[in-house]
Length: 551
Image 1 (cartoon, rainbow, N blue to C red):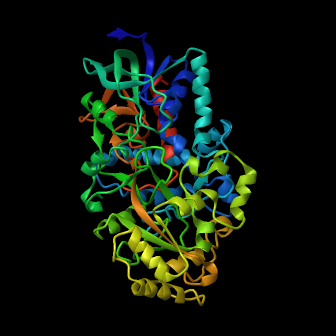
Image 2 (cartoon, rainbow, N blue to C red):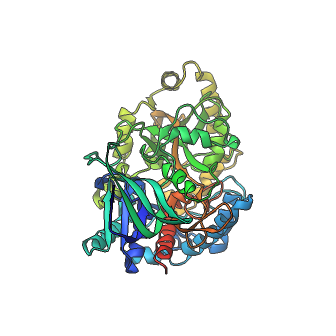
Image 3 (cartoon, rainbow, N blue to C red):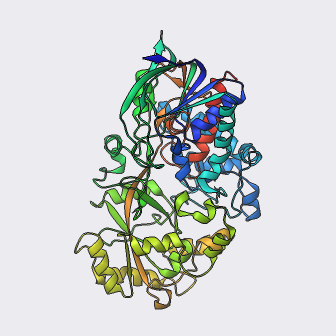
């Protein structure tokens, strides 16, 4: 076993939180080593695959779109969603308050100074459970980065490489941390297995063949290793009873190496894991017809018009509409006895309302291609959506309701969908379209949301009858549970220092990003407001990097 030269700070994980922490420490003049089990082509981790949405409060983009936001309104929404109710929520609550100050304060200016720019139309994600003081965003706050996830990563990748060229940062890929080195209760480094070189493409499985071992020593270790979404067995073990029974079948929103193993390693070194039962999984997952990793799932980012049915063809109750209440919908669907549900919609809806999460599914935004972006406002579904309609086993496209019901029974479980029952649901909803009044809550929401300029321009189709032949063809989409984010994690104080069971800092140990529940061990509580995942990595990585550097 060999020993490497000492560093001031070791960062475990080269995702967004790890890169931010490394840059902040190196900017302070510290010698930083970044260890990452995946090959160099995976630099940036999960942020690379993201849509690049960021939660901002009272931004210029909001004001230009006629949105009135404020720090108090954002806090009302955040805490109504988080629903903090445990003694261990002390630090998560403090982190939530600090993050709201950041999102309403210097976050945009800091990113803008680094070259990050935003799409002018602010999205309205996670519209809520219908209560003013309950879950959800009262106003649009989802700021889409020009360049999507790679656009968020770019300034930090550029800066960490500049530090590496200057000798201040040492990037060690194919180094898997198998343990933390401790002396008298102080974390002083990491024990790594050196894995064989791999040419595996970003996101695909890489070899786990060990070619050697190395101990790396430093004054501080920052754990930025991500969550557990790629480890479905662990997800099922941690699945909370409040969400029903875990699905037997799920699709993976992250690669398999997002397995949570580093959380246990940090716990063995004295860190405390809290809120492990708080997690964020989507219910609008598609099986990727052109997968990057095994069981690769893609999330639909739906507008609010599709009619949502459970596997038996029953319409979901208000306010469980597309894009409103992710975990509320998940909880309801887990009580149906089936692992999937359905969107029923029209060609007119899919052309305006469907988008797919992920940088690779949005080549116009990712590539900053204005000509390609303009194609979104022309006729027809966007090319990535059209490709799923053509190739995905989860799509049914039909010219008649009988054909649609037959296809749903073929793609789903045979015999569950009755044409007559399906017609009853859709005709009842369609009757509510014929006058400006009515009692269908979803139709009322559609009309209200189109008062927002962004929804009217590019996000919400004009309300129309689903069974109107001129709006067709009819479309049904089978939706699967898609694993994604860990909302709990290593408990940290406001300096990003990992805390022990006794509540005292573990000397030398810090955490950031998803490994820390994006801050404090769960700053989002039970629910998230979207645009908060990348932002949580940015904020917690910055805090931990500066603190580890002794600032």
